[in-house]
Image (cartoon, rainbow, N blue to C red; front, side, top):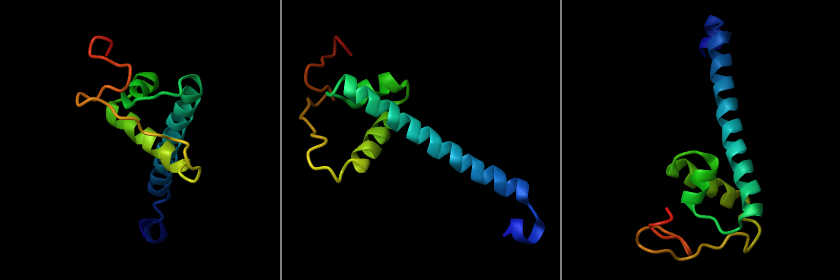
Length: 96
């Protein structure tokens, strides 16, 4: 409304470009994660966080986005059981 009534085009443009930046960053993380999956098809959130150089939560979000994008293809992702400490198959506290 401020744009229409007050001519605040600069404020609107900043808002719009912030949104473009956020979507671009999310897409880049998802693309990097997809590339990594081709190299290493067994993936944990911890490994994704290390590869993307981001937090555990951000890596989890990137995986969730990738799962959502691929949910139309049955069997694309399969979750495997892990220990109570959060380590996946083949991971141990010593290697973490």
